[in-house]
Length: 397
Ligand code: SOE
Image 1 (tube, rainbow, N blue to C red):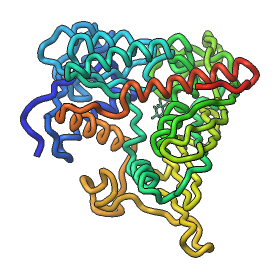
Image 2 (image 1 turned 180 degrees about the horizontal axis):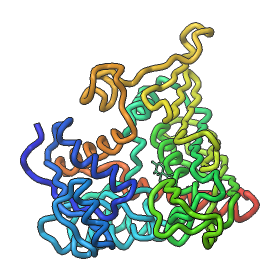
Image 3 (image 1 turned 45 degrees about the vertical axis):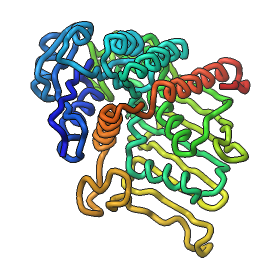
């Protein structure tokens, strides 16, 4: 049973991630027993009409148009940051210093320097019992959480290969309009930080190994796109005429890199191949991870998010990969939902993220992934950009 002690949330931003987080704050205490009861206390957005409409639709109790007001309110315990990356550092550091817990969307920041300052503030705040987490939500997909459990149990043996792709196609149309995700001053990078960051975090988390160096290339296919007002969110292909004024794309459209891992608690480090693109025509949200070990392999594709494919060399050679339908009560998170075989969706990862965050805060423990975990991802992002800028020269992380 969720306790009656409230955890009062103030959220900044209400586009795609704001909607997903709102759903998670509302739903988590209804399917999981939490030590604190999340309250959707205040929603913050710059446009008064827009934030009031969003608050009514998403279920928030009050509105603010300046995020600093959230920090001044004594009826708010946690700040949830669902805004573009260029705002993360200022908001998160101020919130932590004001004694508010923080959930910050990924990637943590737009630079390693910003991520380092955020991590320092988070570590100082944790000593005061004020905690923070970075929203790498795919860790909370039951199939990926099961993959990590299998690696930890030694089911795969030593890890040799990591193969990670994150394939979308919502920018394949060269007339798809500009969005903040294509403006480096707001997003920090393109497919690399937006979706490649998920692959980097998932690969490191599932294998228990950290990336130590990369060789990379970045590509921008479409250099100008029509402007479409204050388009926000993913794939909002507002009806823009071909003669609309055009803006300059200042980020990568695709990122491809090889990586070495540190071996974690094992002997030899794995080697990895990564790809992130929003031009893989026909792939809608194919966040894929394959891990090959000395005893077994596993493979995951978010477009079939309830399935984990598993090959066990100890079984008869012609057994092939078998499909584990990750909906059994003993599987991570699954037992709190529906009977076996009924499946979960994209939104459940965000609900599980709230469950793990609130459970950690209630226990006075550091949630994962911490800002320090997210800083490691930020360092890999920077190494990829550094390598790509020097003809794919090997870059240490
Ligand atoms: C856009 O590519 C995006 O919305 C990412 O920003 C999210 O992190 C991912 O979960 C879905 O795709």
